[in-house]
Image (tube, rainbow over all chains, first blue to last red):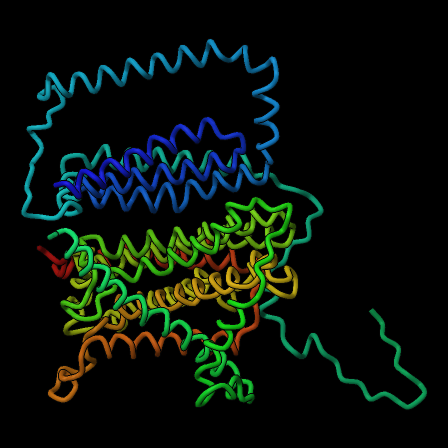
Length: 210
Length: 332
């Protein structure tokens, strides 16, 4: 158990510190790297409580795909400079009350959730779910997800699909005058239509008409 | 005292795995160059040692004694971190590769997901290196390779789902043992082809080596790197290639199983079979490098998103309907 708690505290300290560093660090790209470190340590914590499937999916989805896109945007837009200016400027002080209100609401929500979980465990139907330890984590997750909660599962898939289509529609622009390669045309080109072999007379040359 | 013993045992096991992997990475670089040379009717590296076998060691020695130049405008911490990340990620994934039914460092429940996760993290080494160099060519190379690796990961993931449908477990040993009677390359042959091509793209090998396309980007994200740091990128890249070959061998070629379950073949230990299969796939990788010209970037993206993704998704539907209709779905 000692090794277990050592690992737990290591990962959780890394998670907390990197979460703080995300907001504190001046360079936005560093913020994203700290966010990635945070994701990784949290997935390690998931694995430690035996939720290995969730931990791995967290790594694959958040670290492997979402954070890469974050990095993309941050690197391309050069937000690093903007952030410095924003912190120094007057404009930031206007946003402080709004931010405070939102963070207070989130704080109280967290207190309600954690307090409710601690003092009234049956509130969340935890005892009703099947805790079958003979099958693996992934197996039991699949059994619940594809039987009892199939409609919710499909619905979340629909929401993601709609979001994807929405993003495509919002960013899709038809531009005029862009040279486009037609791959079918390129592949189906033959030697006979591209190359012509001519007999060239000495000192006469050949006239190429195009 | 007990803990210390356990730690020492684990360290011993890890070294027993990592040292052969590193040596074989060095050897595989030599093999790659030799195959490439033979296809082009050249000799390749054949001077240092017998058949030039020690060429990679000589190269490594050269890299160690070269000066490491860190550009003054670079972001130094991330610049140094990038090759370390690449190398580490390439090596930690070997922990779950089963060399036989018992010879595996960590026989975890979600082995294939672990492999997939680690290979999807590999993109960070490249992005970090490209961004931290603070120079145009590395940055362009990094952005290209990030887009490329994210795109091809999707199709690799769907292909893995195809295999998992036939196995019913995420454990790598279970995947190997499910191929006792029939290797998955036979029923899932189109998926094997797509996996192979996606693996080429995922490891930035020719014909998809656009991140380091020397004709346009000097050397891509590696432009500013020198000495040992460049060598670490290089080692990480080849370790990743070996890993992809190992993944292909486990998913489609029966892993450590012998091809025929007859007396003389079953005597050969499983590790040998796995290594032979990895070598076979690697020689294919090397041949592709020698005979195929480089893709254009838009063609690469089209192939990933418009050809491989729909094809592999359709195959998921086909496989699952076939298994469902003939009542072959694995139950455990």
